Amino acid sequence: MSTTSTDDTTSSTPTALPGGTWTLGDRQVTRFGYGAMQLAGPGVLGPPADHDGALAVLRAAVRAGITHVDTSGAYGPRVTNELIREALHPYPQPLLIATKVGADRDARGGWPTARRPEDLRRQVQDNLHALGVETLDLVNLRAGDATGPQAGSIAEAFETLAQLQQDGLIAHLGVSNVTAEQVAEARAVAPVVCVQNLYNLAVRHDDDLLDDLARDGIAYVPFFPLGGFTPLQSQALSAVAQRLAVTPTAVALSWLLQRSANVLLIPGTRSVTHLRENVAGAGTVLSEQDLAELDAIGG
Ligand SMILES: NC(=O)c1ccc[n+]([C@@H]2O[C@H](COP(=O)([O-])OP(=O)(O)OC[C@H]3O[C@@H](n4cnc5c(N)ncnc54)[C@H](OP(=O)(O)O)[C@@H]3O)[C@@H](O)[C@H]2O)c1
Image 1: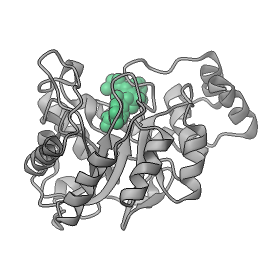
Image 2: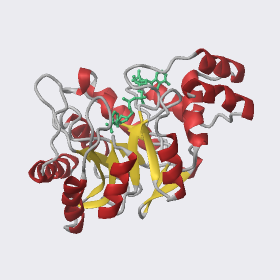
Image 3: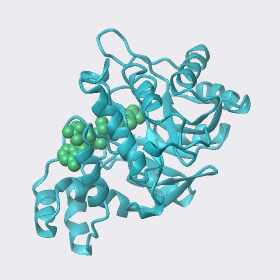
């Protein structure tokens, strides 16, 4: 991306953020990132109610030192990409913008699968245009559907993205909403730098996959780290938070950072205050006893 930085978006030292950094391909990013999905309107459709507030959140994220922002052309659609461009372009050099292809939006807000080669080429072009770049830093192939990963081959779709990578339109590739078999299938086609799946304190179907990826040096990026549209709620979580005198959100994010070094956070928020709270809280140190109580939630 561009090497120019502006006063608005000048980063502080990335390693000051909780969790330090991780290397995605050849790019070092802060493990504490930001997920832009909920900056779009209700149902992830249309513009935000507070346009300037959305820009302020993105600028505050980069000012806080965050160098990993997650988006998709399907959010809005195009809305979060256009907000990112308006808020942050020309992009500060360390910023990595991860986007997703593989689904479109329909008029009712559905996420119809769109993984034919021509769909993927169109979506990559849309992302390049909306973000205002010549090369996308990282593109995740989103598989599955709204209910989660679905068995079936993703080889042809991933081969299409690998070709676009060869053509210079994409720097790094990842996969999202996938099974372990689909991760292996993609890795046989081209290097995979990250896997983005649903995972948090309460939803732990991917424990084994996360550990396998850690052994292979591949990042695991949990989406809905705070529960997404249904905020995480648990007596055990509240009890640990109360004992440590922090918020449940802080505990949920800290647990993920302590879960494994290959976990990268992309919590979403429309609020600068919550963003700052999350950055501050994600460094909460959890004891063995805290971890045992928290592990029981998803166990
Ligand atoms: N690959 C995929 O298929 C997929 C699917 C879904 C999401 N994603 C990615 O994952 C990212 C994260 O998902 P998400 O944003 O939907 O869910 P999330 O990060 O689990 O939770 C976001 C929700 O938590 C609230 N929140 C955040 N900080 C808070 C705080 N300090 N106190 C109270 N509430 C707080 C937010 O409300 P406020 O706005 O009021 O703070 C928002 O409603 C998305 O942005 C997107 O990039 C990927």
